[in-house]
Amino acid sequence: MTWTQIYDPMGSLALSALMAAIPVFVIFYLLAVRRAPGQIAGSAAMISAVLVAIFVYKMPAATALTATAMGALYGVFPIFWIVLTAIFIYNMTVETGQFEIVKNSIASITDDRRLQALLVAFAFGAFLEGAAGFGTPVAISAGMLVGLGFNPLYAAGLCLIANTAPVAFGGIGIPIIVAGQVTGIDVMKISSMVGRQLPFLSVIIPIWLVVLMSGWKSAMEVLPACLVAGVSFAGLQWFSSNYLGPELPDILSSLAAIIGLALFLKIWKPAKIWRFPGEPVVSAAVAAKQAADLTFGKIFKAWSPFIVLTVMVILWGIKPIALALDAATIKWFVPGLDKVVMQVAPIAKQPTAMAALYKINWLSAAGTALFIASVISAAILGVGPGRFVAIFAKTFTQLKKPLITIPCVLGLAYIMNYSGMTASMGLFLAGTGKFFPFFSPLLGWLGVFLTGSDTSANALFGNLQAVTAQQVGVSDVLTVAANSSGGVTGKMISPQSIAVATAATGLVGKEGDLFNFTVMHSFILCVAVMIMTYAQAYWLSWMIP
Image (cartoon, rainbow, N blue to C red):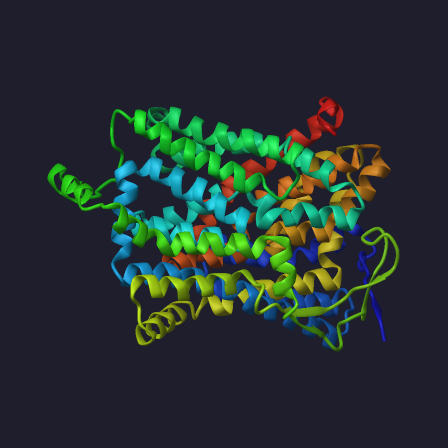
């Protein structure tokens, strides 16, 4: 027995889109206005989505509940598994005292908080996004900033905003590859077009972060370093996306930013060292002693968990290795959902029964790479089995509330997708005619806000972007790329991302505060991509490959 999605259940696409948006309004209201804990906001939005799906979209109740449950399962594995293992590695370095050495080694490069944010949140976070994605960069880099002494809210917010630059090419380019698969457009063309949009954001993100931290005047004091980070990142992002493909832009760009900053800071220092107001200043004598204690062996040992982590996620991303590991995946076609829901035009090119395949890729999952890295790190740091288990148990206890929040927001994403609610909002935006290129990035922003993933947003709206572009007479390459470029600006306020960031920084229960910290930046950056896309559609069409 199949059920066909209805995209206009109210007989008016505007009214249908409004009904479909009820869960979005619920979660916005609870997070932004009521500042409710993530588990409350997520569960309320999920329940409202199930009710709208059943009573407005006439989705069979059993099917709706099964779709929601499948999303919740994905929230537990692989998403929560990544968060758990990433924070576990960080906690192990803290518990063994090694993070103090990590902190001092970063301070030996610069003890200016503005520059530390560029190194850790922007450059190192982008590297982790390129290698692993799916929450790893925010979990690791935000935890590191807290360990360095950053205010937890700033640490989480800065890492979420910094993650704007690399998201479209995250996880070895998987968002762009998926966009090509669902649209039939040459992947290299989509990669090139995204590489002619995102570098404009990548150049300004470092300055944006520092202004947010310390104000415009203070940002001008470190403008040379911001430009080194932004220009080196954006330059390699443009080159690699246009000439090498979607797999390597984040890896190469972040390495360029890290190396460029490290070398530049050897020959240039800001006139004043900036720290957070009220933060104690380390005396020159203490700083000198800490620097003297930093032998290469000590630094290497302290950084070894993060080095091993990096090596493991890179190995897990290499295609032959990934395919071999994926052979151990357990696949389960979800009864009552697999091939039950029919997608129709214009969301699908032809009537298509939606698959419902839950994969337990226990060996190829990024979280498993991190767990193996934690075992190797424990051996290097001298953490015995008993202590290893104790730290893991402590980490799990620390993350009990995110274990509720993350499955709820993934359940929300799945029920809105399977019921056709997300498609209704997308079709409403697609009905804007010649202004569609302006609203095209907003579709991507909406998709990432709802799903927490640029990959999922491209799978969800990629075909709609291509079909609508052809109908209104603009380049489908441009609009499909804009879906990904606009999507990156929604990542920082996605409930999934918020849950990961609060878990990593000890802000569980303060999800509303973090949402308010990032939401305006998300809107501004999204509007910038919207204006850019509109200009490229009609006035700068020479930029389209």
